[in-house]
Amino acid sequence: MKLKGKVALVTGAGSGIGLATALLFAREGARVACADVNEGTAKQTVQQIEKAGGQALALRADVSRAADCQAMVERTVASWGRLDILFNNAGVPESPTRVEELDEATFDRIMAVNVRGVYLGCRYAVPVMKKQGGGVILNTASTAAIRPRRGLNAYCASKGAVIAWTKALAMELAPNRIRVVAIAPVATDTPMLPAFMGKRVVDDPGREAMVKTIPLGRLNTPEDIALAALFLASDDAAMVTGTCFEVDGGRCI
Image 1: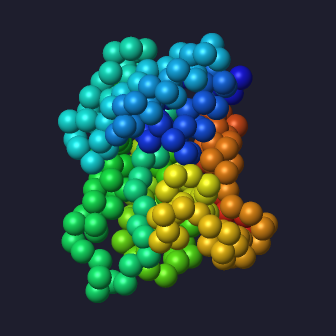
Image 2: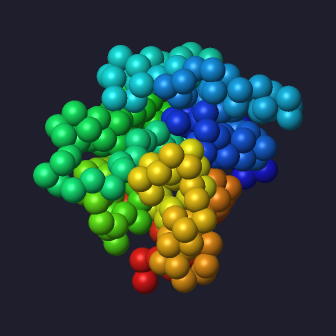
């Protein structure tokens, strides 16, 4: 098992990429703290992990709030004594919107969750990792930061900030043996997908239009990203830090 004996904290663990990653990390031997703004879905993830024989902890956390991020890290460490992997995965989408129609509240919410949430997670996890002699921080970025799609200006900017933050923090924390990596998925089959299409549900025309932009000819599944996160969190990626790891079927070529 690639993560045997490790302790991981995954945000946005109640659905989509976070759910798939929490389940995979647990199968690979990690004890997993599952944080989500929806405590009910976090508990459902924990139930799946425990049913399969793993150890997990459900945490309610709005990652845009400092007190919630501090509490999720402290509860994880109080439960298991350490924190080896932080996956700052929680995020919010943007429906296609012309810049002149993008209201400040929407812009601020996207930045608060997608950018401040990453900063706050790191702020409280890094002292723990420094004290124990190392760790891994994974941040969910997006191919939208590299090859933007029209109408997603705030979202693209937020994920561009995540990539820049990742590179800067990797330089800062390398002497502390803490690796920091961004993961950039292409469009992924998660509950957020309809929002990116500006629709209530994903329809065939919307799906086909997105798939046409991906050379390998399909969308990501949450499991695609979970497998990338597993590699990056494991010792197999011991020399990987400061990079943006694209999981995009060739979208960014």
